Image (cartoon, rainbow, N blue to C red; front, side, top):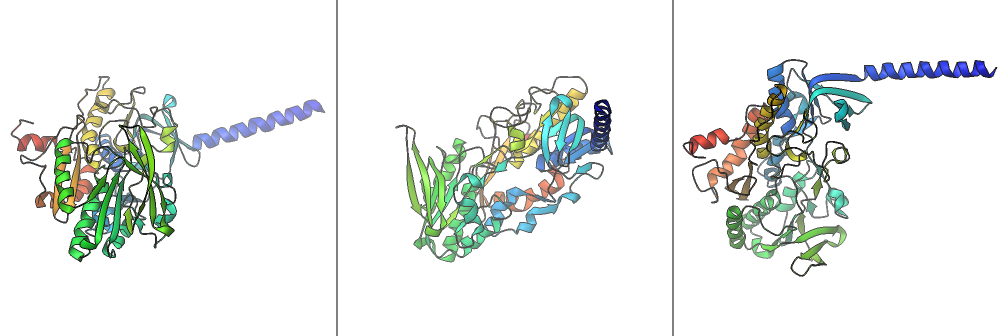
Length: 442
């Protein structure tokens, strides 16, 4: 009787294993190229690879149905653009001859050349490109998630499609008082964004006649107003002209919307001290802290800080030669912007091509990134710089000056370059244009 029971259990176990094995096979897909993430970097790379290697060679893993051109959100928050202007269906942006796997990445197994996604699906690859962006951590500030949902809190943020339209509602309905704008510790998306919306708001207050009854405050966790000296000097002049109060090394800790109060931690590096300081506010725009996605932070492809660990000159992973990464999710020490994605895309594709041919990639990415620093309606400083925080300007003029032309470049031209150039894999940054305009001297 015991032997019959053992045989029955053994047969059942074998049948179960065969069923699980069959299910695993059914849930397994394989591609030459897998792109994890359908943001700017992911779509730029996927478009290039699909066009070159043909149908069935590329898969893009991306759960979102809507793709946003996030650099436009400053202008959405400033009332110059609508949220819809920044959005397109993901289905219309995925390359036609690429496979869209509409799922979340759940894990990486680079030793198996595999990515695991939701629904117990295993996707294997010959080459992997990680382009998953970063995570916006509203919950790192006590009281902030609830305040953003509360229409009476006086608090908004441009860093989410859920809240960006609230920013302009607060600006246009502001009747005077204290308006605070915050900057968290780095890294964040586009480090200039927290102060761009402040300059637009101050400009709007002037035009609506409430500026004389208003105090505009910029509380930044950083030690400098901007990381590139040339543009920082220009911004200080803007700040002085506009009468904005700046407090550096002042990091937002908590908001108490029912009392219209915000608690900050003020750091004194010289004395090695910190203390809390409470501000009253009537309106506040919060730029929240950001960091790596948990699925990346806990994965084999991440460094100790949770970013995908790549060679900053080639975009190739430092431990897994058939893995590459681009954009905000990487360990590359440059500002996390769409402009950086453009500059990195061509380098990544060249490096990938070298690896496929059995050659060693050439280090060529110089850290190029850009931040169009909007300083008011119709005024922009076009900051462009490299790894060493040295200007790397495209135009043969002084880009450290506020210019109307650069504002319209930001507002009207750059979105078209993004949709029709970068996401299609044909715009790889302004390096060639820069050389032409500088007669080959840059």
